[in-house]
Image (cartoon, rainbow, N blue to C red; front, side):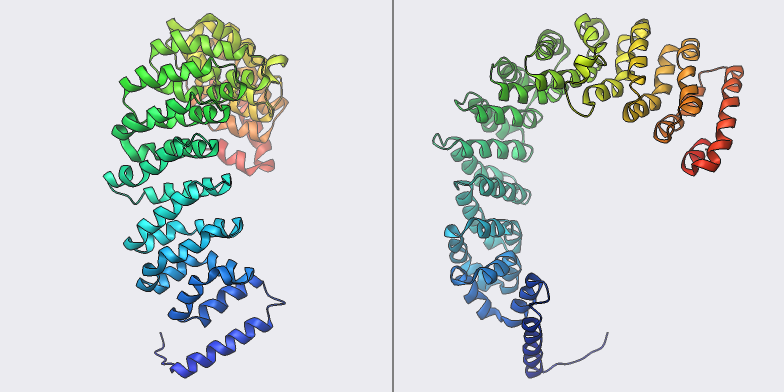
Length: 463
């Protein structure tokens, strides 16, 4: 590095020259970039502080520039700005929405600038959380979540919980109750089991009985996040019955939230809850008049079956799973979501119900394969080794070798091939040497072709 000393006068001259250049090129250059350089170069600490205190009097261009970089200004000013921070923040309470959004977006950085800035930041966030504009409420909530990461021990409960509960109890504004629920879900892991069981869970359940459907729906949306934090006994006695009650609602929005979070509740539930309560519930969802609810319930089905002990699986669940490739079921959701879920969960379902069900499941497998959907076929191809291990070499030779021939010879597709060849060695392990040699005749013929056509597949094959 060069040790060059610059006199104060030279610094001042350089700033003037640079500022003039920026102004002259403003027409040609990006205005935002010019403004950023201009205020950094022009303002000493006293000027910068005075401008922040008078920000409401600025032109919109200057106001935008200073607001977007207010966290930098605060850090640059140090203690001077911290002492005046409440006054600076007060200016934004009556600003236009776009400037409030820019300001709120900087608050977590201001919070980190100084310990003395923390309380003013939390206070202004609590103000914006009660704003009439939902976008501003939600942004303030996001900032509060970031700030919560810096709080220690009781600080989280003492500083944040009163703000959230105040919003949750605002009977006149449903948006406040919704944002309160979102904060409860996001912060429950930080609050911990004690606060979650003593306050958060009860607030969620209370708002789950709200007269407004959007509030009840949000309570269900946040339920799994809280349920992961509370103890098992609390979940079983309080939150699980609450979820089941919400599932029985006739309101479509609330039922939609229930079915969308069904698998998250399954993960926390006992085998008895799965068989006695959740099995009838998913069947009820699958018979719902709403196409989306019905489709999501089918999308959950494979994973749900795999989560139940074999002897406790309701036959109706298998019956419905076998119908997932039927036209009236597979078209319930866009982008082949139902069939993909069926294909993705196929090995897990087979493993759970056992090889005795292979004849039925083999028909479903072929039905899925014949759809010729690349994503679904790749998923099935990638799971052939798992299926072969379950059904054994004899059945795999009869039922799965034709699929391999199809993949490698009759209708080769590079993505489907990649799905297959990654686990090809695992697939061949279960067969005798004689059977392996029979397959390798096809394999080596294919390898010669693919060496020239697709190096990516060839490299995978020769590993």
